Image (cartoon, rainbow, N blue to C red; front, side, top):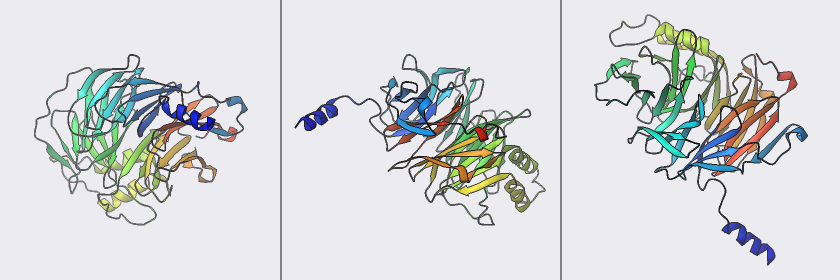
Length: 394
């Protein structure tokens, strides 16, 4: 009787946390909090240091469900699909809603600061430049926008100009910072070196491309399955679902359970040699077969992470660890040594009944922190000690 009463009282208490599916999780820049976006139309900020555990007593790694959070975004009109901290201010974040609306939120005051886009083009990813002056957004229509946060949004009414591919890969709107890829865009990352700033774009048909947004050029990167020995046709159900980059490593995860590590320097080189394919330029002299071979040489390693789709990958800032998650419900940590995954040292950090949508990783001193969603409405934290033998992975 007493047990039944306690269970009833527990069920009557207000839940601390999300009331519906968690779609996205992300560490703050300093690694002290986790921000989560949910279909319950809220944002929550979770305090890592308030989680009940004693790090100094950990033998190897531990897992906890985060329970200490604050509601930093409520009364949002639609489900929140995507969230990114602004690099120069962790109290400001960009969020993408189910209907395609993009807003900047002041997390300290839990209020929207500015609406950058309002429409019906669902947003799948958001990426800031390091100086926080530009925000990129990738949409279901294939549009990728580069929005200056210092300038007002302009009406996008000019006629697109076909520029890339046979068949065409993308259309460019002359004079405006956007490109429309002819596939659904699912993920974006920014890759910068001394020569250029490129947006890596991935999505439907396992398409992978580079957008030189400052010079308005687009380059295609053929996506190759090394286990097949040939470039097989990609169907509309095949997606590159997630991208991550650190140092000179690019990680991709696809709907067939494959994870690929790329040498980003080689990706730039093999793409730039053949492209851009602007409409007024002559066709490239290099054949597609030769081009595909060159880009396959940019692949550092490709492996099957499971029989179900992979949904999310994240690289530590030093490129030494890869966190991954997918529809099989597993959260996996893979060490990387000299740009090669140490698959025999992989650790399954969590195994859940339902698929995992999002994962992120942060390094804090001699510890590795990984966060993910779990079984719908939970936010999890995994804490590991760094392997001393893996202190310098480069």
